[in-house]
Amino acid sequence: MSLLKEKLEKGDFVVTSEIGPPKGVNIEPYLEEADKLKGKVTAINVTDIQSAVMRLGSLAVCHLLKERGIEPVYQLVTRDRNRLALQSDLLSAYVLGIENVLCLTGDHPVLGDHPQAKPVYDLDSVQLLKAAKSLNEGEDMVGNPLEGRPQLFLGAVVNPGIEPLEPQIIKMKKKISAGAQFFQTQPVYEVDKFARFVEKVKDLGVPILAGVVLLKSAKMAKYMNENVSGVNVPQELIEEMASVSKEDRPKKSVEIAVRLIRKLKPLCQGIHIMPLGWDRYVPDILKGIDLA
Image (cartoon, rainbow, N blue to C red; front, side, top):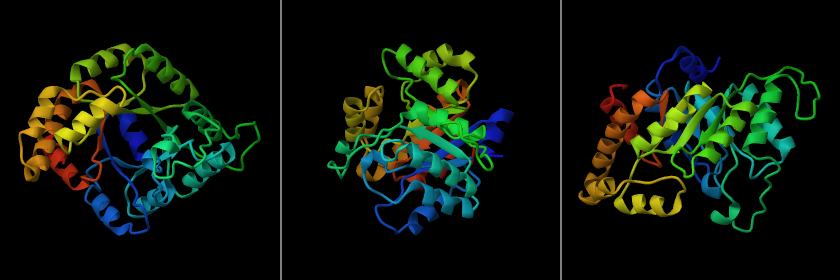
């Protein structure tokens, strides 16, 4: 059984982190960073051509993590594959020992480094969840029986800060009906707003891991406020980041993350830390929240 699933079913508070594969094949530095988190986080997400920037594939990196004794979460986007390839990749993941899958739609190619690429979007994230659930039940999308069925632990994303919130909750319910067994959220910086979201969805009975992105600078925080839907970094946090030198930004970022996680912890079943390349600071965060 998936370790992530086992811990969430037991009611343990879990921490997941995230790595983005390289744009190339020099994977060793990324694996070395992941090794530092082994035994300290429950699982590590591997992004799938994040931000539509061509990179090494998520499935290959998940397999390498698994070989090193690290539990991966396979992020799978519908942007680049049709329903045949998506189902095939889900089966491939399972035979490689990868049980956790986060089902996503993915950013449009026009936002990435190959804007001329043609998007597929044969399925959306809800339909992908439904397809994966069908595989778990022993059939493909059109009802053909499988020769052996996977047991995938299916995750989805929710944005607790978006307004109005009701359409997001409706979509969350659709994802649960389609097969979602856990959720990781978009970045959370406003604890009060997150608490209101949790109150509205508490009866859905699906574990929620609150997303925390490490702030690298005041400029980054302002960029997210202007460009990432549903994310608002409060002005006081922006001022905190602006008040320190470039050399002290990592320390301040860790301090903010620890403070935020301590406030979020009573409201959710886990935390998903998105270090955006600052993987080396994740152990410091875990020490700060007494989970190292």
